[in-house]
Amino acid sequence: MSNGIPFNRDDDVEYGAAQIMSPLVRRVVADNSGPFTFKGTGTFIVGEKNVAIIDPGPDLENHIEATLKAVQGRNVSHILVTHTHKDHSPAAAALKERTGAQTWGFGPHGSGRPEAGGIVEEGADHDFKPDHKLRHGDIIEGDGWTFEALHTPGHTSNHICFALREEKTVFTGDHVMGWSTTIVAPPDGDMQAYMRSLDLLLPRDDVLYRPCHGPAIENPQDFVRSYIEHRNARNSQILKCLKDGIRGIPEMVETMYADVPAFLHPAAQRSVLSHLIHLTETGEARSEGIPSLSSEYSPG
Image 1 (spheres, rainbow, N blue to C red):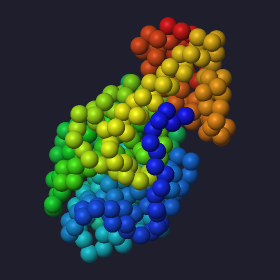
Image 2: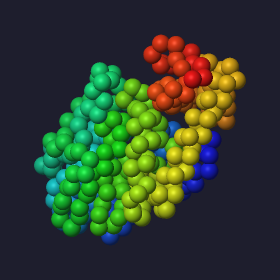
Image 3: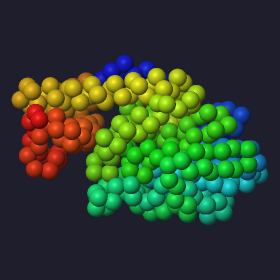
């Protein structure tokens, strides 16, 4: 169910090559394609002589070497990390060692939700700790480029988007992607925070988004609105399931994601859990005990 989201899965990728995306931006895509990474993680290089690297990517030697080749003859002054999943941040350590650049990010994995007690979902990079901690609205300046940090929790609590002022372009990491919706998996993922983070983007005058997976997104505000509509439609589906007497998340997923391959249902269950946590917080649903994958739910 895309609920009218204008997905674009047409993305020409040449692994190991630095693709020119704009006057200031090049992209190197890691060869880590999969059901959650699409054709691979895009590592962006911004600038000319003195450059920033956004999302170094997975700890794959061939990707690290390709990124180093792409910045050969240039000075790497910044390594920026949108969030700490294993397909985004682990290569930061090798690139820092080989280039001398320092790292920027919100903080370690889970640092945006200390109340979660450090319990986070699988696939997290627990080793990354930025040299410089960023907060919403912080400015990162380089040689011919300027980034504004936008704290956009939801996919992870430490997720940051980077807005490139010179091109009115936002590097959205996994917050908004053009090929698919974003997974929001508790306990670090938070649907209520995610919806607020989508709302945060709407008043801005950005003209382009560059996600880490898939092609660029044009007409970004309209795209975000379609994302919000999709999430609201999921809420409505869940409430209908509850009204129809469906009480468990596995049964909801079988109903709501009937057209989705079964091997993706575990991820869908975590997404539905995130929606239900949100709905219990707003009083539209009730849970027997603390909301979990095995809880039974009822209308609020």
